[in-house]
Image (cartoon, rainbow, N blue to C red; front, side):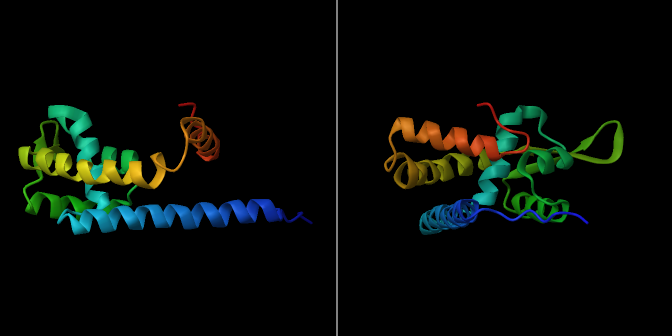
Length: 152
């Protein structure tokens, strides 16, 4: 017979609070982007990863790994980003069916405009409410919950 693991009341409280706060922070940021006439937060994540990759771009599977989107979600999102002129799809020389995705000039500008709102949201929702020491503590604790744990 296997023994059931039951979470402690403290673990349940921490989980519930983490889930609620996470949802509230994302919803508030989404609202700020929408009020600014900007695309959703998911677009920023993809544009950011593509901008970080440079002119070489990324293959769709690399975006899936870096953003943790499901394959069907990234395909739809990339189609929408391409339709809006924010990314370019380029053929891969040694893979007839493969594509590399690269951020466009318009995509870089959109990412810059989104960051102005997104960064302000981070400061207002988190940075202005916690001291530097508290921010470091929260970051370290959340890093321990990641798989694999984050040292940074």
